[in-house]
Image 1 (cartoon, rainbow, N blue to C red):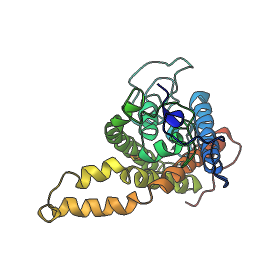
Image 2: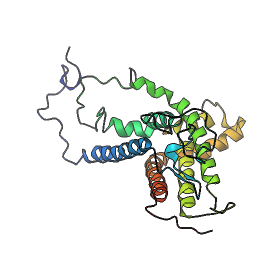
Image 3: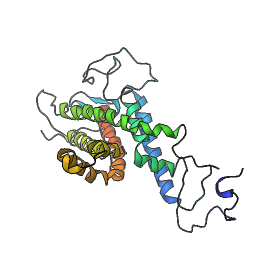
Image 4: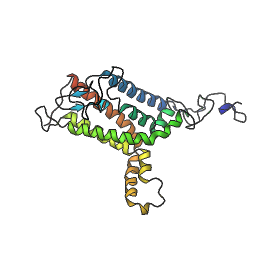
Length: 265
Ligand code: FES
């Protein structure tokens, strides 16, 4: 049986859509933004160098936690639990799959890549290329339900990144030191927390399944705070892609000797 826009009873429209605005622009920009991040992050994750600045203890988030004997001395804040890694395994392999899973299943990113990469649905009043729309009821999209579990792991990774940002207040002579790198690492970690806590699953954990907010004042307060962040979730999703790349780029440039860190203390 013919389904979708060609199903019996549907109006026959001789063109793909009747929209005259530039409806294709947002999907195109989304594709470009996501592709930039994916290409950059993949390249950097497999590069295997310039991820640690020993003088100032800057560690890029793409390699954290660094838990193998392949990691350079000092960069393993949580110890080296396993031996050398072959070059095809990124040194941040412990966190990267979960972070990828967290972002891929994020409610905002779903909207973004459904309307761009996946093209289902593409835009209002624009027929999608697939004959049938099954939403998230079938494999692989049914896996989106794992998002709440990725949220817990992302929270742990944010804690790890916070620790990395704190130990980076280090001077080459030992003791406290501070430079532009610290400011960048700190902004990155604050934005990561804002993005993680603004998650829809977090909002549900804070205040979901309650019949009476009045009987749960603490959860109500938490839900109120998370809700305020939640309305900015889309912006935070894009901002954190930018801060992650910027933080990594800065660490790479300092670690490779291309630039010197601007020191304040
Ligand atoms: Fe976006 Fe959870 S909904 S991170």
